[in-house]
Image (cartoon, rainbow, N blue to C red):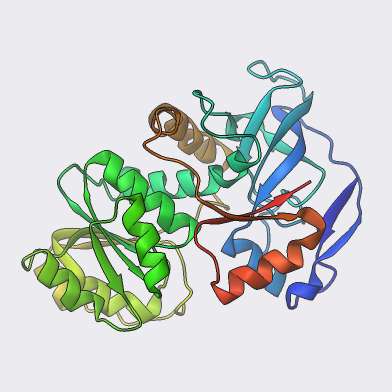
Length: 327
């Protein structure tokens, strides 16, 4: 088969469409004929040499895909050859075929609102947002959720899920166009981080309450400001390090607010833990997709061999929602 390979870390040009061995599904795995693959910032980090796949995972980038099941490994009972699915991957989505644990596979949502290509943009964002905003941070109806990077794939999903849960949603984004798109998705408080201080803007919009939950993709550069933005009892979930990996945590302010800071990634979790997250998404999020409360936000489609262009777009930030590679 053919797949995107990374012979040497580097810029987008480091991505090479090449012949590679076909994957073979092991016990408890299924083989998927890939129709489309979502592009994530983690793929960019892997290409640059900063985010290696977990041991035993495919060396090829791609943390989510959609397609049709081509074969079943031993001890797989819940799927059939030909099923149209999407899947959360530890790697290997930028390829013609990928093997994945059966517990990380999802059916297409019912209702016909999402086609097979667009479904490739659902697994990573839904699992990431649900695991961090709901399971870990415990967002509840009536609370305020602050989403940094509201125009990203993660951000556009977090806005929708926050609203579906019954929260008030604030977003930061770097352009009027991205903020307008966030408003269309349901965001209540719009903050342009280029022109405005998000802490003071959030404080003003919430009458001094702040955010009960913050979903942060920035990391170190926003750490102190995020603590200032927290409500009493607030929860900060850090899922990205675009603003650096080392920061100073103002413990006095965190203690005063009885706040908490959680940091997690999805890719390196054990298979059983990822299966648990996928099962929760299927139970709680898939009905929201089926009835239209939540949907994938797709910025553009590009052919899989043009993955380098997809990475260029992601690095410039010139997109809102998901970039998807298609066969």
